[in-house]
Image: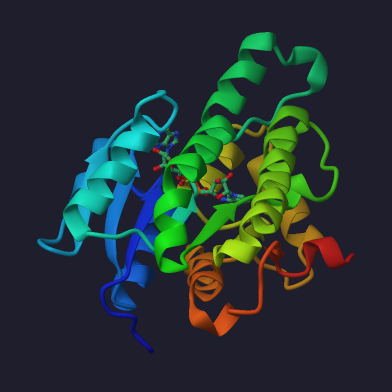
Length: 247
Ligand SMILES: NC(=O)c1ccc[n+]([C@@H]2O[C@H](COP(=O)([O-])OP(=O)(O)OC[C@H]3O[C@@H](n4cnc5c(N)ncnc54)[C@H](O)[C@@H]3O)[C@@H](O)[C@H]2O)c1
């Protein structure tokens, strides 16, 4: 694997799932990383001089600026922001409250905006990039995901907007749009289904490759969008969905 020495990254939602796989893959590529998560389990990622875990809630007003400052103070520069932390909500709209709406936007959308705002001056200095984690739910309609889908649609548009605003300043901004990925997030959602086996069968039949993606497959796409291999790519929403949106 090609490595990129002296590059640094901030990854949110790093304690498990796609975020953890992203930390592992970026670390293997030579990045120094500040790994953020509300879960104390993020501490497992600690590696002297390489990975600094920060247990923090991305939804507070202070966290994004504090984390970016910490990354720059610790490693001297910031090359990559991965906005990955999010919560899922599958709920028919008539059962969805204003509190559900506010809570989901507070975690899935506003922190990505605030992290980008804090990181962009540093990314501009080094020609860095942002990779946002969207979802197929931000690209196509999926029943009973209205608010979650709206949050992911917002992430898609944040990606396009920043790509245009910062293209001439040398900062690339892209997103991945995963389909079903085999993570705890997915397992917990499935366990709450009245018939988990039937729900899994429907999920698999909707993905032409007939299986869920792995967290590492999404992490590889994130690493690609961060790397010079994608130097000509910005404003792209890269589906990692086993063909879901091609149907
Ligand atoms: N798993 C899937 O099938 C799937 C599909 C499409 C998109 N996604 C997206 O991928 C991303 C990662 O999903 P995952 O499956 O790895 O989920 P996950 O639940 O396994 O991991 C998400 C991480 O984010 C953290 N987090 C949540 N709220 C936080 C907060 N307020 N502050 C800090 N950290 C917080 C959690 O503690 C967790 O470690 C999310 O943006 C999700 O919307 C996942």
